[in-house]
Amino acid sequence: MTATTASQAFIDAAAAIVQQDDVADILVRLLGDCAGLTNAGAIGLLVKDGHGRLEVLSATSHQAVELELYELQHDTGPCVDAARDGVSQSVRSPDEVIARWGKVGEAIVAGGFHAVHAVPLRWHGRLIGAMNAFHASVETADDASLQLTQAFADIATVVIVQPVVVTSSELDERVRIVLDGRTVVEQAKGVLAESAGVDVANAYQLLVQRAVQNGTTLTEAASAIIEEAQRRP
Image (cartoon, rainbow, N blue to C red; front, side, top):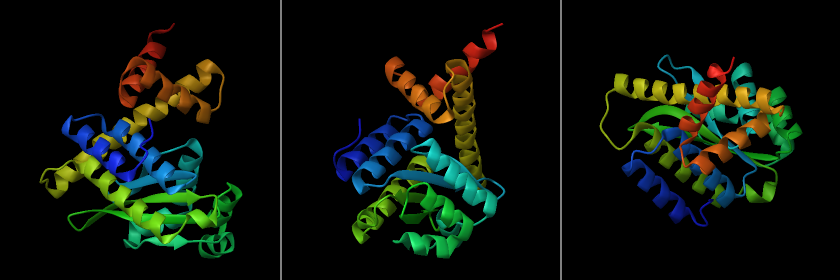
């Protein structure tokens, strides 16, 4: 269930961390809450792996994943820039989005988004990624939504690294483990898309529904789907 206030969203995230809930599951809920409370149409999250390469960690929709992957392919875009430079990117007109990021900007606008907020993720001064909020309406991409997006990004950072003191190598390992969980989710989406005869976007929704119905985390549901497929002749 989507939180009705930012306070409730942060309380839910903190409770999940204390309970050591599945990181992928917490991020899905957190990004969904951020989208709902900032009126963003979609949100994507990029993190750096142990070699400094950016990878998609979480998103609110398959469309957001595709846009983030397109940014990575072209090595430019609001989220890539924020993750690389550590500076928030806030562009509030479709013409400026295209002027700033060329083909990537065109893809963003073609996807129905006319404004973007991209904010960095930092842990103890170390830049570990960025979060990108895509807005269909320029009016919703105001200063208040930018500030709230950064607040959600800060909470997402805590979710990823957990509230403990870690070394640089331990942080890289933590991010690798989380990315491995994302890989399981992506594999399960492919299995569901093929078995149910639906596209990847709908397969993701089926995966989320299964996790909710079975009372499991997203990663647990994804692992179960993959195991079932492997057992089939």
